[in-house]
Amino acid sequence: MPNLGVPPSFVIHMPRTLDIIGTTCRLRPLVPEDAESLARNGDDHEIWLNLRDRFPHPYTRADAETYIARVANQEPVTSLAIVVDGCAIGGISLRRGEDIERVNAELGYWIGRAYWGRGIITEAIRRATGHAFGALGLRRVFAVPFTRNVASIRALEKAGYAREGTMRRSAVKDGELLDQYLYAAYDDRWVR
Image (cartoon, rainbow, N blue to C red; front, side, top):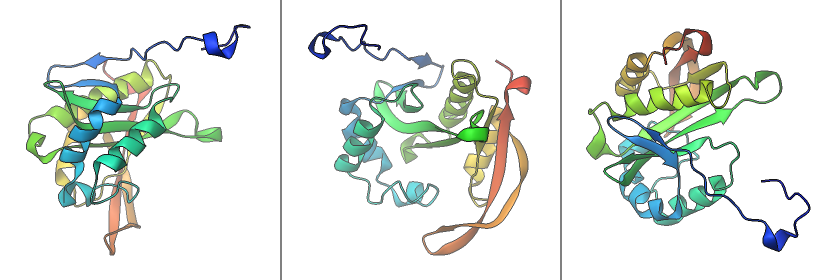
C-alpha cells in the first residue's frame, strides 16, 4: 500500500484477501497458524524425494514458520496454502521468471500423503494456473516433474498441461541423477 504522505506509524496494512475456492480445496495466502499442519503433512521422505532440495527434510515447524515469514509480504501473492477442511495440507507456488522470461512462471506444489489420489492437487494446479493467467497476467506456466513421478505427471496432464519435452540428466536428488519432463500451460489455450 503506498504511503500517500501519512507517517509510517499510521499506515494501515490491509489483509491479504486472495481466496480461490474450488470443490476439493481452497487456495489462500499462508498464515502463521498453518505452520503446525504444514510441518505435520510435509515431514515425509516420499514428498521430499519429489521436491527441490530447498524443501528440507525432515520438515519441521520451524521450517514451515521460516517459509511462511519469507512469503508473508509477497506482492503479488504467488505462494499459497492448499486448504482442505480448514487445514493447510500442502502448498502451491509460482516462481516468476525475470527479465525476458517475466511472462512465465514455474509451478511447484505438494500435499500431504493422506490427501493423495483424491484429485486435490489437480484442482489446485488448475486454480493456481487460472490465477497466474488472470490476476497475474502471465502467458506461460511450466512444471518440471521427475520422470519417475507418475502421480504428478498425471495431475499436470489432467489439469490441462502439455508435455514439451524431456530434460535428460537434468537434476540430482538424493544422490541420484534424474531426468525431468517439461510440462507447460499457455494463456491462449487455457480453458477457464
